Each structure stands twice: as structure tokens, then as C-alpha cells.
Length: 117
Image (cartoon, rainbow, N blue to C red; front, side):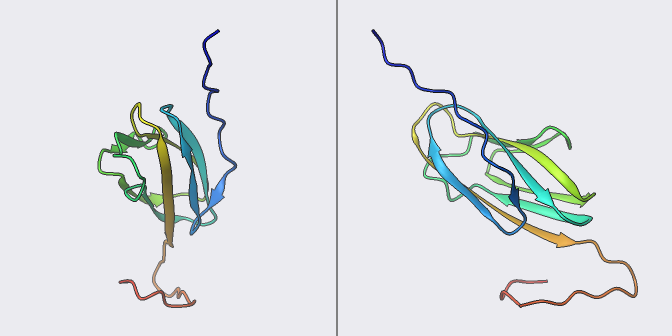
């Protein structure tokens, strides 16, 4: 009897600022990211142990072959993404970063992380 590799399960939703990591078994991984406010979101899967074939968001109709994707002017909510690292087996890592949309007269405060604002 041939062993079978179980299909990947969809990870629980993550929030902006969190990183999703895990084992990759040659199957596309669908995952969800919550953005609590209107703004921009960047996903970075370039540190995965395997080469990114495609990182995509069907809701926005965009994809990236280099593993880094930035979407602008998103409404708050939960977004679905797909990560394809080909047919190899290894580790994946997707970090998220979000920036709220500001209008004139608004301000943002918080801890500075050393990155360009």
C-alpha cells in the first residue's frame, strides 16, 4: 500500500504584524490575514526555505513571484492568500505588516521599529 501525504489544512487567520510559519509539503497553502483598519498591507514570504513560485490574493487579483506583495487602500477585513512553493518539501514563512490609511488632521502613535515611515 502506498503512503499518502495528507492535504494541508488552512491555518487559523493571523493579524497584521504576525508571522505564519510551518511545514510545506508540495501543496498550495491558503491562509487568511485580518487587517483591523483601512490601509496598506505587505506580505513577505521571501524568507521561506523554498523558492516562492507564487504568492497571490484572488480578491484583489494580484500575485507576486518574488514572495513580496504590497496592496494599497484596503478596507478593514479578512483577506485570503495562496502560497505556492512548488512541489518541494520544506519550511514556509510569511510575515505581515500593515499601515493605517491617514487623512489630513489624523495622527498615528506607537513604538518606532526603525523602519521608514
